[in-house]
Amino acid sequence: MNRFANSAESPDFDAPQILRRTRRRRTIGIAAVAAALIAAGGGTALATSVASNSSSTPAATGTATTNDDATTLLYLFSDGTTTRLPLAGLSLDMAKPLLEKTQTKLGTVTKKAVKGCKPTSVLEVTPHAPKTIKPGDTVNFTICAG
Image 1: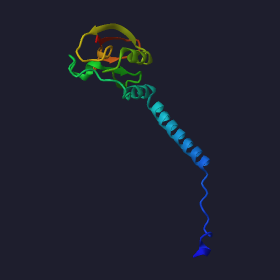
Image 2: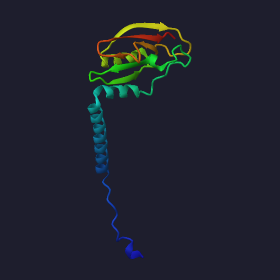
Image 3: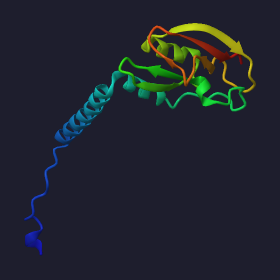
Image 4: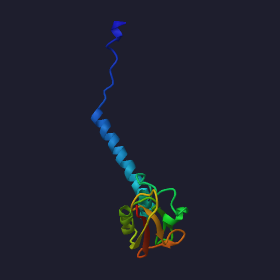
């Protein structure tokens, strides 16, 4: 039994090489996903990155706007495709960069007192879905006064 104890070779793990390979695969995977999103349409990638922001606080449930379309912009791309941009619960400061990226203009901002909503959160946008907006259009906001 003792003569077999030292006969088997132990595997040699090259930890730095494994780490580099893992990082390289992760980078290639991220690049592939980004390339697919860009190939599908740059605006679509923009919309999904903005819409997937899970840290936003939704507007109060007891607001006067019961229809989700009242806070949703329907953006029309030059190729005729549209995408939904939900703004419910976003603050006005978070919505302004979205307007810049879609090349739309900020119109009038109206404050409305609604109980239980986060101050400066978006309660309504005009024009909202099902009407579409395109670059150069003006978007009016109704935000929570607090």
